[in-house]
Length: 314
Ligand code: ADP
Ligand code: DP6
Ligand code: CO
Image (tube, rainbow, N blue to C red):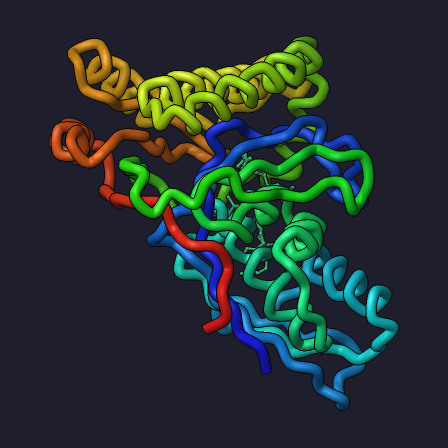
């Protein structure tokens, strides 16, 4: 049996659209920061008696097409037609906009490939994680990573930018709503691709990737935060302008964003980013975190995260 743990990651430059849904190739590259509090543990073991894969998530037998896609890919890669029993525990709310698909499929990629006897490098693991969920390609790595859009399975991989054990960054999650989202990330980005500004968003994102890489290389937290905030708000604006318009924000989301901007304008390093859900994450550092927490604790449960590790065996 093989067992792996992977942590969630927050996108600083978002992935929000697919050029190929079957292979899960994205329309743009993206940059993430793997975190150190929310994670998934998954074990996988070949079972000769099974006639199909057996997948248990948080103690419940679950049908999951994306898990099947990953397992079928591994069977085709190895020529081994066995089925596998998979047990996964999310130490993160599932499908709530807190990146359970990222930790979930990074853990599955490692555990399931090892169950088939493979010992893949991280780049290959990231492509397999990507087949399950795009953001999972980045959770294979610790700290900051970039997922290159690529043009086919092998060229669409993530790699480490900098494993920042001592990079002074904090991500403060304000958990106001842990319920399951009505529009999954996959559905949300498909709708967003109909927005009139979608092509402009993609070309702007390429420029923001270059700026973000420079900001990370210079350990410039203010630039990192300003670019990430701009990128996130533009992504959510796309959703509001899609042909079938939708919005992950609630009033609480808007209030926290406003409070974060007010903090920044009064001299605190604090920048908002929001994935596919209503919960705001505030990017700050150790010096500013207590001011941020003091100001935002009334809006929801506070969780402080630092940079976390890549996927490992446990
Ligand atoms: P999130 O914001 O949690 O990433 P998504 O809509 O992107 O939400 O993905 C949620 C889906 O990810 C779940 O419905 C499930 O199919 C899949 N998922 C979540 N956790 C796991 C896991 N541990 N193993 C495999 N798949 C998972
Ligand atoms: C807003 O990776 O969850 O969090 O590939 O369809 O599973 P699928 O989508 P997913 O999308 C994440 C969207 C995001 C931005 C990001 O993490 O880059
Ligand atoms: Co997800």
